[in-house]
Amino acid sequence: HSSVDPKEMKKFQLLAHKWWDEEGDYSALHSMNDIRVPFIRDTLLNMSSNYHLGSPLSGIKILDVGCGGGLLSEPLGRLGASVTGIDPLEDNIRTAEQHKSFDPVLAKRIQYKASSLEEIVEESMETFDVIVASEVVEHVADLEMFIKCCSQVLKPEGSLFITTINKTQLSYILGIVVAEKIVGIVPEGTHEWEKFVPPEELQRLLESHGFSVQAVNGMLYNPLTGSWSWMESTSINYAMHAVKSGAEGRSSPTESLSEMESEQRSATAGTSV
Ligand SMILES: C[S@@+](CC[C@H](N)C(=O)[O-])C[C@H]1O[C@@H](n2cnc3c(N)ncnc32)[C@H](O)[C@@H]1O
Image (cartoon, rainbow, N blue to C red; front, side):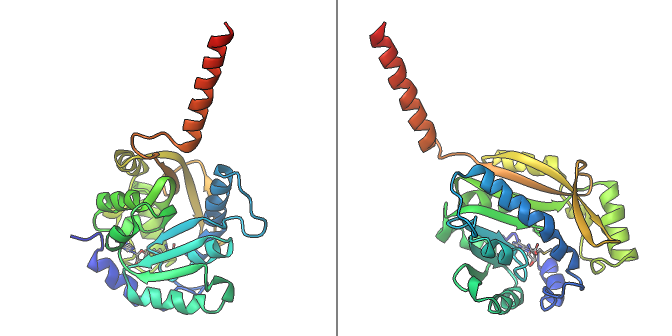
């Protein structure tokens, strides 16, 4: 049993050498970096008190699941993160490795592996600070297993970022009819509407695996300008940020500290009365 759908792999195989053509089949993923990279970066910076000038994500271990040719792994690596990019398709990983070699800064920051998520679970239990799965969950064969594996490889209080497509009439018209059949933003057959994921369903799945959803933001692609922007409505594309709950039965170090402090304070208050 696997989260990998062989039919999907066949589709991605045909495009495995096209990842870095900015005007080609993956152009919308290239321009999505303009909003998804700041979303991930700023969310993480807002949650952290450490700031490393020039490489703000330094010290953060990110797993980029379904990394494809490394379109998102590379900018995250340049921001200082230590990135592991995995993808079940070997030719995608080959393309990602080759492109990474053009920038010496990335040599030590990114490692790629041809693998599914479930294959690395055993060796990577609670290993990563952050997981990104961008435009992936609408292609997996078993979403529940995928989310469970995300929870297993993420450290307690780690962050999960997902971008995907909602399952609405509008997403059918824009995401399949317009994008694939009329304008040709992505090749025909890239998406199956049945596999699109409503944010409510994703949230329910995440919550049942120990996550709490922190943000759900709608995203809009403008095919005329080839650019993405945020919007309130999540009826087409959306980005979700969820945080895994702290270690079971234990409070987080900061919580225990403040608990101890307040116990001490009440003890002191008690003696002074
Ligand atoms: C639309 S691409 C997105 C690539 C990359 N995340 C990006 O945004 O540039 C989807 C990727 O997910 C991968 N994929 C499909 N099913 C997967 C699964 N079950 N587990 C991990 N990756 C998967 C595909 O091989 C493909 O590279």
